[in-house]
Image (cartoon, rainbow, N blue to C red; front, side, top):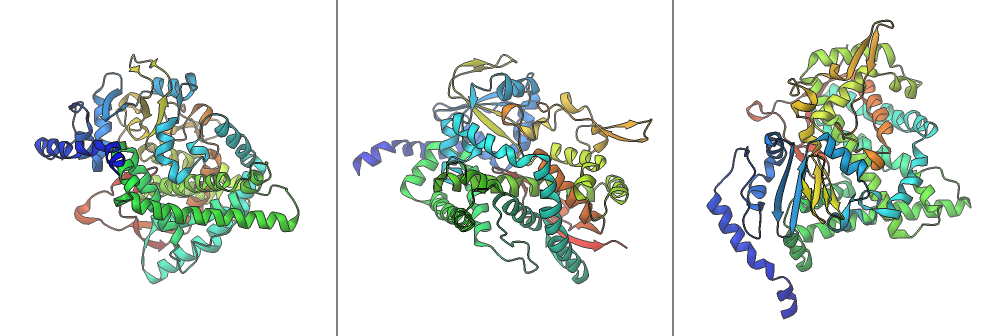
Length: 501
């Protein structure tokens, strides 16, 4: 027992931290300069005080930097570099990809939830998972996804729920509805399993609640002192005690899916791959924990990112009727029930509006890599081995150097050119290092096209028939953007649904 207490002697730092926080007073406005760094605990007092406002706060900090890059002593033994500089993003995600990895500290922080799944893996393990997963994102699979999975979920479940809400004049949490929709979709296409989460009764799934809590607490670990959450985990107290329970529920659910798929494949006496899970189980790497890790990673990617993007999209267009009118015009020209894949591909203005929405409210607002050796970034910032280098996607969407003086405006046209000869819009993509919403370089998101097809099909199917009207918030405030591993709307997205004439 004495040795345990000795090992956790850094607990003695906590009273000191509390004392410094009290001396520093409350910080209700974002700092325009780098926060003060104290001995041992670094800038953690300022980071802690601005935790509920950290995205605008960090954005202001990088904006005041001549290089759009800042360095901070985050907490004991933890130094971080945060950038909104496209040249630096290219450096860490592509040019020096071999130096900037997920790293031991990141993997340890998310190990309980993600295990060794693709989003928490490096090296050969990551390469294997990515190579095997890539086969599920070819044109044939994408067409099947849209026309057999998305459209079924859209017209058999989502539209009837919205129609009933419109008739009964009830208020829906549209963020919850979109999460349910995305959850059913990823389970069907990825695992050949239908959780039936978007039934008319809107069942309260124990797994979904546990998953939300697990993502939130795991995300909070990334912004806290490592020593603090490790001590709480060792003693099984506070949020770490709750995390242990909810992760157990998440893993039990994912493990059930794996066992059912194994049983199904045994009964059919085939190793043919009809979905992502079948492909992994047929690869020879069918150890239960490993495959369970993969299931959890793809649920996180397929459920939380697309639903987060759509939540903010519907809020933005509700507040920009001119954009909604342009989208409706395109929908009425393009969308008919039937060949959903081709229709979705042709929705150029809607595609631009989705890109613009994710510029301001990215589904993954920040991502970090750990330097495995010393390096110097293109802007001259020195990086020591073990330093976390994060590219701040949320801040990058607000940089005048990248987007111009009108960066604060929601304007899909910034992604478009007018083709005079054909008299139609032409989409013009931004380079992935200035707009790393889907990452960039070797780890660029495999599901990017699948996500866009799903989102455009939802937008077309919903807006053609319904108008989504956000409920007014207290004091007329805008909804708050909160980010753990993914960015969400705090308190949900309450709406009323109005059926169009």
